[in-house]
Length: 333
Image 1: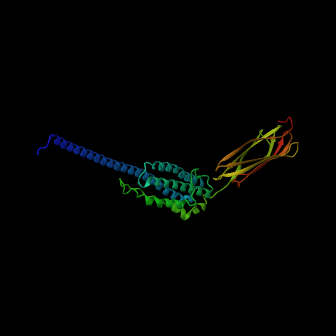
Image 2: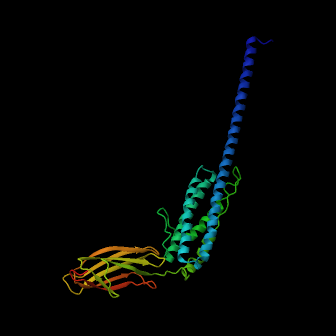
């Protein structure tokens, strides 16, 4: 039986619909394939970028570890200022690690490997800062000290070993992901050395031993004394004199000292004067106590004593000086 025109139109419509559906399915499948391929390409790029940056930081950490091991192992032959300067240089490098680790947290990667690496780096920074502070404290060095955001560890060297072990297990997390990247291992030379010998060799070193010393560098009296015998201060007839004292810390160690100035008259109407001052001196630094006014009278005789306490006197330095003070009579210059 011949088909009617209406049947032929319906048959053509069904074929057209089938073609359209097939085309839509093909286009949709192509888009899914492209999206999948694009996602893999993006993931591969992110993984490789992370690996390049992370490995660069790991290389820095391993170089840092090797150089620190040398410093701890040979530091006993250095002087206190040199050892302190090198230890402080190591401490200052840690700020870069923190910035670099924070930047590696984004974008988020598979297995949270970037967060794991950043967290371990922050822990290592705290461990190193605690370790440096421990060494400085043991040797009475002025620096470095832990930063305000540091989380101290009771056993920083062991914590460093733990972070190395943890990372060397997690560093293969991206090996089977797009990009098949390889993340480098961390080393633990300095932490191992510190655990085995701690700071024993450093604290036993003669060149790193604390040598304390303070002394009076100069005393200035105003008005300027007239020519007189050694140990005597012959002053013009004034109603006030001022005494200024400078002191020096000859040791590479922070030291506190107390200075005493007294003027004890042997005649005249005025009572004895006693002045006390305190100061903390940084290593190898000097400090000048500004002039202090003391009431005097013409024809007065007195003993001026200047004394400091706090540490042993340095070689060729003194911690006390005494002068006989004689005020000229009125009208004498």
